[in-house]
Length: 514
Image 1 (cartoon, rainbow, N blue to C red):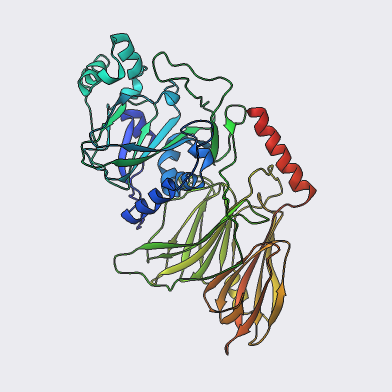
Image 2 (image 1 turned 30 degrees about the vertical axis):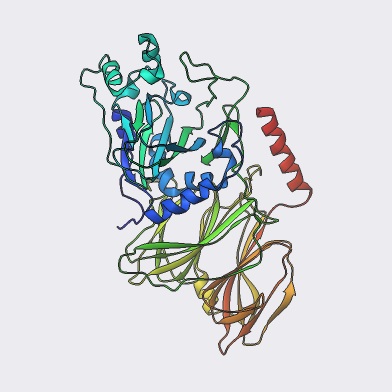
């Protein structure tokens, strides 16, 4: 099966345990690197608490760090419950040397820390990272050995590093992988590593640092040996998979987007791919609404036989709607797909719901490009809800095709982790029929499957997505000669006194952890 935008390299736990690093893994293409770098550079101000605190401060850093292609590299080693504790841009000028070292925050002999280093600009073998394979198993940091030998940081060289390594392994060597922009190097937090930018340009890389949720992360008071750590001042960490452990780390919610989602009309792309394309994606919007702390929507095109990523999971809930083509949706209770696995074929108008933490992916099971659109949302701060529903595959296509004239024939409803109510219904409007502008107290997403309508002052033909945040006026009227058929999702968050109480409890809990 083709897996575009994913190299197919599996960073296994065994590989990191044996040599301490893996890769490079091709993750981003040149266009993605440029877009990511532009977004990261646009961040203003200072990160929370310390210089690696962009993990908890920046939606742009958080978006990259939770990309399924990145999480797939760390999950085999770290398991189901993962926190992101460090994120930063590493900029090295021409000829700049970063001496070999161990990241002191992750030097604990017990392990449980994994770092992902991604070259974004002017990256090649002469500017990328160097490693001492197996050094994570020495049980000692290079900083400590240099301190014992009386070597200052600026006196540490490749030669002195190799001499120190050979005290533990007579066959020790230095390896510098052939890495380029968009390539990721994944390494154990204890391994000795460094760099020397020998290019004639400034090299920029992204550093993302993850840990098992049961591993305490602390801020060093300095970087000279012996290392001391702040005991009361803890770095903010963000849960990126599974559950965090507030008793171990200072858990904070993911950085909240400052922009609000407004009433929007989003025509979906034509189901066409260039001969050299197997997967393309188009973002429609991302932001907050009166009901949701963060919601994102995009549509994607997938070539026959292709899959966008391996089984993955995330903290957001998700609705995936098949617009055209044939999808095979894959779901399971684990990343290997061995527990409670399902493979479900779905056609136009059918949709799937995945709760927080559900492992899922899809493939194009047809002979033409597959077009699908997605909604992903989260409401940070809500307590767990035992009444939340499980994953679901809803055959809405037939209901849409056979719907009687009228508005709002219900087909599915669920209480979810982040929503008090998630409801789906189908509608059919004869030409000229519709309803006048009004405002709902919940968010409304509409997928126009067939026909043409007038909405928000625009004439729109299928396929298209409309999104109306709570309290935003919207109406619709069918135009043209054929009926308009559409699928509606109502997303109702918790509101009123209960919502305010949940937010207050979340803030108080964070203050106690501070």
